[in-house]
Image (cartoon, rainbow, N blue to C red; front, side, top):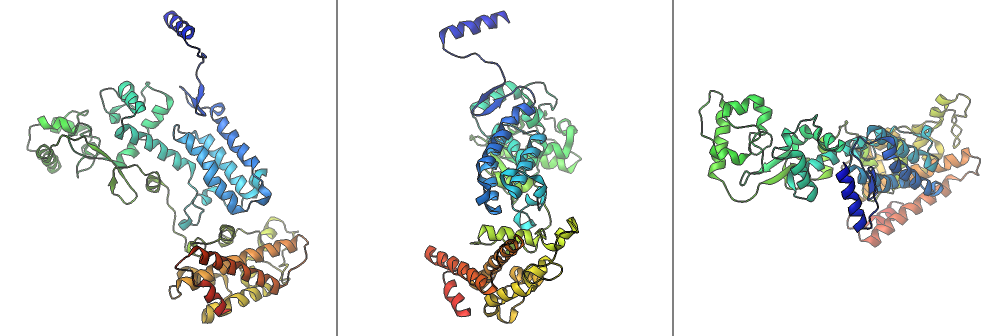
Length: 476
């Protein structure tokens, strides 16, 4: 220890370095030797809070907040997860902040959430908003670190192989090893998942593990033969495929062992000088020479039943703020009179547009005489004989109808979302004491929105929807 102190002082005398002790920060990340604690990931939480507080929530729609969560907050988190496996406490706190910001803005009021965060994080096809759960993203980042160890030759990888793996294989390192840092021990726990995705295209066989990697059509041999397989074949557990060149073929009573012998003979006959190529399985079950984060996530994520109405909400060229409100309505989470009555029996639950005693979602869109007048003025000419103002029938038409061409289907979908958004805003303005807007004027505003949308599509040169303006005029 004294010698180390002497060397340290001698080095500092020659160079103008500042002596420090772990933990220190490098590129904004803490360098740790022990498990990450609250104080270690607190800078990330504070950075996210600072970003959230700097965004002016008054002028941001729900869709705008969702975009900021996806592009900014998730990017900050992904930067940390690329190097660490974040503790569950950190993940839960970040998701709590994201949920509160989405529904209440910078106030971060978690009680205003209309949809649970677990539902928000589902795919759009499954009724969510397509935000990736941080727990699953954390797993993908750990798998990517394993991929780098197995496939690349960076300085970090060479150090890991020299000092942590040494002369053995990544697959043979004990889970309870005391070597390396805490993140190394966390990475080792993901090896069983990595085995399902990792494969090797055999060339010289010096890189591929004979027992623990998929180098033939038989898959991972250790998973099939367990620990007794190396005794039956006489090939050590730490052997590479190249080591099997010196193996003498045997005849076995077990048919699978004879198949392994055949694979060894194929390798001997097709031996080349080139280095083995690492492969990773994508979401379609095919092995590629590159690690794809999204496709790996699709493989490991928890799936949910498909949602029947997602096509009516998430379609090309939709306006995000319209789509978001429609999504909330489709999930039955708008604060309509019947829902508010369940929370507080003293609240006025009647429809402020037509004075119906109980305001429900289906009534507001478009059983209400006010909203039906608007919807009828917009859509009777467009939908023709298939015109309906019933919510369930509308969602079914917008999702499954195949007889309409692209222009007509887009027109009805976009008009539906635009009308729903404008009627909901009008309903809220009246509830807050503002002067009512006649149905004729609101219809003209929605009509103007639709025309502006087609104008934008025409200027952009959209071949599929470029004729939408003439179609709209002909039906009006």
